[in-house]
Length: 269
Image 1 (tube, one colour):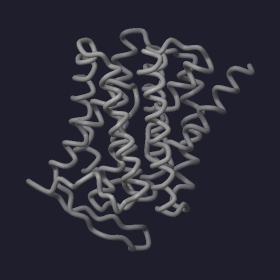
Image 2: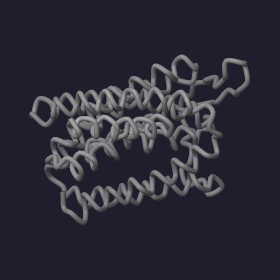
Image 3: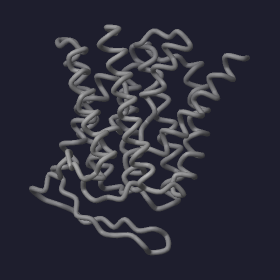
């Protein structure tokens, strides 16, 4: 009973954080499942991806009611993300994942600097090729219109998907800053990222479920807690100043990078 309650509360807290900053939550689900509950890393990754489907869906429902999801942008990101997530699964069979994760951890650190110090502009907009025009407007009519190139979304969708396949995270750590680099307001970037995370998480979770890498009891516990937390996080996010979200996101990226290095490089998992 105590273990079940602890699992629910932990996942609820993670769900709140994930919904506020636009990530699936895998960067915290995996380490809590392995370090606190003693899961095998493979089962932790598989269960984490399955839980992300619930948490991201719950948050997306709330963000949809707020009118903050850019559906076309989410779709363009999600398609290459799914493809490269599967490709990454194959690549990890031939390349030492510790080397790959170390490189991606450095990329996370670079993106954290972009979010913490926007004037650095480390993530450049890919402005070539066809583009679409999307309106980012609140229910009161305030907001702006942004021009988004397909090449930018495809490139970062592929990159995020590749990271997802290797590390068991959602790829949202790359989707949000990539969307912000296009001039999309943070709240819309967070909401759009969460929707794009869903199909990627489904693809990854399905593969792991077939391999028997999903714990059904913890999927139920973590899924319920994450769903509740995601709804709470998405509800309070609009009240948080965009600059505060950017700084919190940047700090979390540094934290994620440290976790990745610790678990994949130092521990050799």
